[in-house]
Image 1 (cartoon, helix red, strand yellow):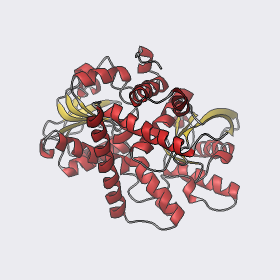
Image 2 (cartoon, rainbow, N blue to C red):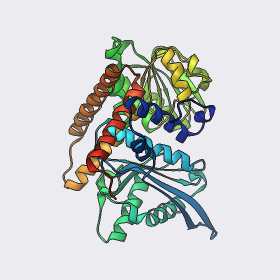
Image 3 (cartoon, one colour):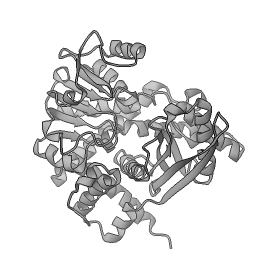
Amino acid sequence: MPTTLSTEQETNPWLAAEARFDEAATLLNLDDGMCKVLRSPNREITIHIPVLLDDGRIEVFTGYRVQHSIARGPGKGGIRFGPDVTLDEVRALAAWMTWKCAVVNIPFGGAKGGVICDPQLLSDSELERITRRYTAELIENLGPERDVPAPDVNTNDRVMAWIMDTYSMHVRHTVTAVVTGKPIDLGGSRGRTEATGRGCCIVSQKALRRLSIQTAEARVVIQGFGNVGGMAARLMARAGFKIIAIIEQDGAVYNSQGLDIAALMEHRKETGSVRDYPGAENMDRDEAMFLPCEVLLPAATENVITSANAGRLRCRILCEGANGPTTPLADEILREKKIFVIPDILANAGGVTVSYFEWVQDRQGFFWNEDLVNTRLEEIMVNSFDAVVGYGDKHAVNNRTAAYMLALDRVAFAIKLRGIYA
């Protein structure tokens, strides 16, 4: 198996996922046959979606659904819309979902989907037609016991409602458990919107305790102010963290004494930007990443921490709210700098954990209150953090390698128990 790192792994998420897989598999001494099984996606589907646009033209959009593993349960993973969606990206995200579900020990495999389109250029009715045709093309591969999608980049609870309705119309009865991240009135779970940010807050608190840092002394820089970053900022501020900087696409704002997150959210809602917020000073978005802080929380896109900038980070803890924000080459630098990394497949697993709760509630037809959702989420995140860190201590590896080793070990064990059907 390859062990050397290449610069292409800085830009290609599938190669980055493979690099982490190879390191963990080698340390686990997995045999070649099991490595082939774990490395290979179970199914990769490419579809071409003809859609009648509002102006009467017909356009054909390309969509993907990759089901990486179903060894531990049905596939689980979001659907994203974007002009830059690629099969390699979807393939990598599906693999990450396999490992993420295994790290938090919930009974799902990994899947991911995407459609190449620009939602900014499409009307709501055009997006609905794309979504419904995408769902119809995949109908035989979706289902509560097959593959359960969820929202991702540029999709939301409304898109999930369209998918649920389309699937239900095809099978001729209402199936709420076919997707998660739905509106509460259609079988969604309380606490789902805040779940990923809440999980980031919980594991950051655990990391602070491990490093003997008081929460009140913890300065936080957050890149991304959407659902994950915004919720994490709000919940961390409520827990006593000092959020000193928020970084968005158009710039950053900084206040060494801590930002008023609720007021900043209101300012962004009114102006469309975090910039020029009266309670902070504007700052270059790239430079804000290198502010001295206890916690840096990238919550936007992949590959923002690379070999070119990792050496400039001045955080004690890196909590990866986004999927794949750190490249394999950057990992080597973070290791040398002794930055405590909470890897993405642990840090942002709060979302899929509460998606699991939603799936369970839909299948039972019995719904929990938000306190119960949050209590059970905290229990799983705390236990998973302890399992990963304990695995790392036992095997003398860093947290990311420990998380991958733990995940691969669990999935490989399930495959061995099931055997290979022939």
